[in-house]
Length: 356
Length: 273
Image (cartoon, helix red, strand yellow):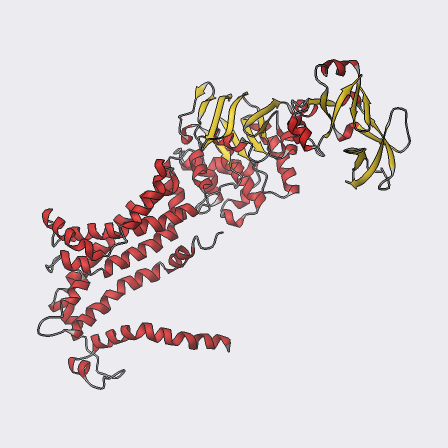
């Protein structure tokens, strides 16, 4: 079902937590709200659920303005970060609760509960109480309670953040399959960019209550709208180099990078820029090479399948991805080749310059 | 060894607490001659049930017992229903002008002056609405007297309960009231039980208002009835002890039945988890 936020603002005691948010989500989409803690993503979700009031602006579901519709009549299902399972009810009663309050007949209720339980492979837990379950099992029960009926949309508030790393990856895959299977609009809040990239059909990146970019994961990664998005998405993070454009070359300390005509055209009108380059677009070479940049190895981290190389180039620090078999002594000299067509330029703000 | 020492230390406390109860029980079973014997027969005497017969058959103590039970149970139920609703409102809804805090303190402040201050005004009010010598008057007064306690106790239990659970119930399609009944109240049941026990004990033992507001056998509660055996000419120790011994029983049974909840209820909020 289509969901639309129109100029939505939420203030708590004079402080804007969500600031003039406009967002249009299509039917069947899996949209991830991504941002650091305090960026307003959870508040956005809670406003959609009706658990927070909207200070100004409108929220629509299927064209119907729902600002004043009480939570219980919005027909949404939500998975809470804490799972919020009812401790005094068995798992079967927990999953059946949304049906019970809708006065679904007992026979049908049991039938639907067992169907959902089978889907999520938790049939054997139905008679237990939530406190007897592991984190992963509780997570599945919370999901089951959400999908036992057919709501207009699923809202998920960091549903995987309380699981251990291995289980998180596994549940991530299962969530994606589940959403694909059900085809229901899903809005998912997380601060984990890996979850956002893998799950979303579109990602909304937020910072301090403001929407930074709303696009597909590929576009978010390859064409970040601003430095914040570029820095927040991708691991290890994008490298940033403060510098100036002088006579067709990007200059920063000892670093000199010749630019092509296309880039120069975009950079005209301002001389101070921040260059961004992802670690995978820096190639580390052991031998000097024509046009290569000399650098010193600061430290290397072997990840198993690849190596992160931390480098010093004059006053600049860079991270590069290298193959797993890359070996270099600390403080040894290496040469870098930058994939110049892949670099990003962001206008330098005063606060960035101060940070450096 | 250490374990035994613990019991040795507990013994004086136990003796201290139970000695009056023992004294009351033995008096209720002694003949009048034994009651006044000197030195008193501590353990060995010929027991008699004469005083129990006197109290509950000859005199109206059975009637007092019923009145006490009706008043205590009804006022406890009223205080729980009204107080729980008030506490839930104060714990969960943000009121304007910092009313949450102000109302809470105001409710508490009604317990800050001595109860006897209200005795005369209450007597006059009850006389004007023609409720003197009725159970209703005591039910109303006890409910009002217990309300602040219920509100404060339950407020604490509600505040400790994660909001997520009610929010989940709302999103699942339940109404506020439905979420309260189906999710919140079952989870604060230990707190409700503990609060109920305290209210019941207070109402059951209350003496001052009962004395002021009721004078007839039909409306008199046990404590007033017992005290009424101290007369100008004689003090009926046997009858008083017999009635008092019986008066202990209901509270004892109730507290034992709810003991599991009582301990949990009292420690709830003290330890998170």
